Image (cartoon, rainbow, N blue to C red; front, top):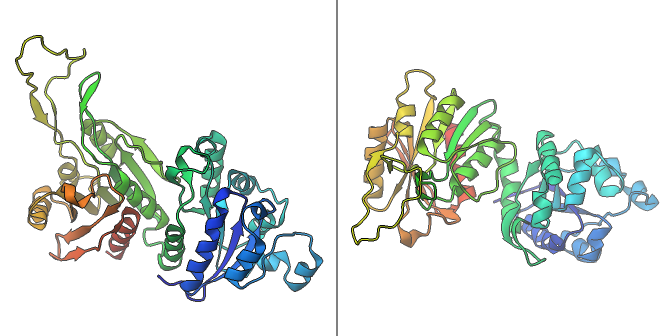
Length: 400
């Protein structure tokens, strides 16, 4: 990764995760970029200007009405002489000010006066993150063209667990690099993506499901959005944070997913990353099935679910120009995927090994191969985070 000659204006706001900004400064400089830091007053409670200045080797700015600073470099100049402004950590407070155009200190004045791209890395308590006011502010910022990295799910300093944890400095570095290297390759394209498992009900309290987490599909939705696409994400039940700036349609069953896909067409690209259950019960019981008093086994009769990938790939009307399937295999990986791409009729097949030893199903990393039906080429991607894999897949699609 390289940020050679890229100038980052780093705004550090007052959150417990502010100390991670020091590591990011080190990583950016190691990647060839430069950092000029601006700190809110409350950020001083967590990191010192001296530490920030020592690592960035640049003066740290924190006062709006400072005669010396204004003489050396006015705040308007400071807001524009950079390639990108990064707010890290971005607290609920500064996000609210950004969303409503409040400029009551140097950092918020710079954000309002800038014509540079802005990226924020949110960090806050899980309840603050989930609050409707914060979510509304986030959507406003997304609509205004602000980019986001994180937050992620994890343990917090307050002892709670959930979304709101600051993305790691390495993830933020990756987002910065992607900003400067990834063009809007899917601008004005409509991308339809399915993600997660389906739950096929047996009775009111039981269902047939699988271990899909939806992480790869959600990462693909975010990557397609960042590449400029209009994204429709049709998702089965997951615990994933809904990506901002994406139309999300929630479903439970394969039949519902098929209906949602049909209604979302036409699309320029359709990516079927969902792990759709192959079967459903032939007869749904409206009452809970009781355990039998005798020792006889209970028998359930199954019928096949609709093959959404095959149906879409063989449409005569509204068939997307590029249809991509996913093959989760445990043996004969490439052979099974090559057979599947012929059977389904899609253009590309993304295949991975989901045998238990890999830790891929439900995990944070993936390792895939992309099979192109039209030129018979196979592109193998090295194991990486699902976010990185998603970016590489979207880049590959964009190059088509």
